[in-house]
Length: 114
Image 1 (cartoon, rainbow, N blue to C red):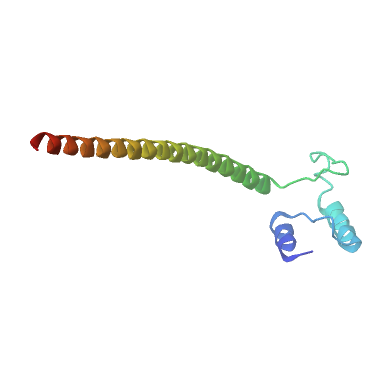
Image 2 (cartoon, rainbow, N blue to C red; image 1 turned 30 degrees about the horizontal axis):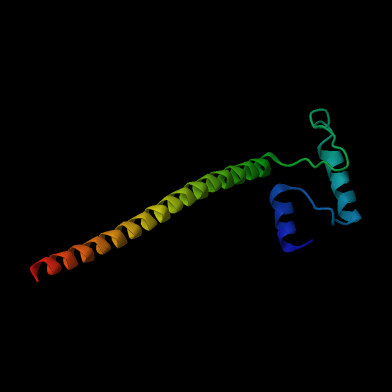
C-alpha cells in the first residue's frame, strides 16, 4: 500500500484491494472474536460494496457540499466578469464616440470663426 492508503486505512479502519491475504486473515480472526454480538446489527456486503465508516462518509459529503458551493460561486463570478466586460466594452465605445463628437465640434467652431 502507498503511504496515503495506509494513512486512510489507519484513520478510517478499512483496507484497499492491495492488502495481503495475511492481513485479511488477521482482520477476520480479530473481527470474529470482537464482533460476534454485532453480527446481527451489521449488514453483510456483496463483492463490490464496502462498509464505510460514518466519519469518512460525512467527510465525503461535506467535501461534496463544499465543491458544489464552490461551483456556484465560480458561476456567479463568471457572470459578474462577463457583465463587467460587456459594460467596459460599452463604455469604451461611448468614450470613443464622445471624443469623435468633441473633435467634430472643435472643428466646426474653428470653421465658423474664420
